[in-house]
Picture (cartoon, rainbow, N blue to C red):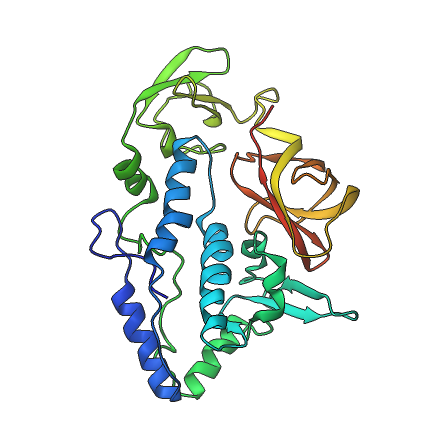
Length: 327
């Protein structure tokens, strides 16, 4: 699956290296190899959505967008149209068929590599057609198997960058090339101007670094608590400020997606507020219209509009939703 032009000066996707590596593996295993160009589909559903989201002051997750619209959307559709029965990927997740025919998407066996969080926006209808071959293994075990059977990419480094950036350009610089810098004021919660910013998209709620504002207080640092797009301002406060709104026990979700039977009313669940955050107990009131109200047992820090919360029953992923604008 090719998703980006490396020739684009605003992105450095290492697609040629990826192509050569995948081709070498298929040759080693003597299996057919075909490249599907997904560039325009990816641009429309991931890159444009990312740029538009940041431009509006939100913090969207490109992995969520890619999984729903590209990997387990268009790529799966093309695979099925081309005669495939299943789509197998290297995600560290597990799928189990339950009694009654329902499919359960669960955390990967290796807790350090679990990627179930990124599946929170996937359409539940695709679960019967997905296979996660490494989901029940540890990363170390996967490496050992690859070495034993002589895979040419057995020692290849993990990729942890946004694919169209390739580690060669920062997300902020990429966004700057598409949105354009628009400097504005950094203000305290009482409206006092205490600094300048180069563009709201360069910041996210909860950020401490890169503000370049002296705190003039011992052991205190400013942190972003709001992105005021209407006035092109970044609002900051001290981390210790209890009234800054940085920590909340109540949050609204929109675009709620279910990977199990849809729920309505109050349900006690485990919430993963961000990737790799520890699960936290929450009561979620599902309204049946794609929105929900979440009440956490303990206050959560820096839940940014546009980010995703995934909800679980034990290790089973039940779905997720996007943080709506704080009221």
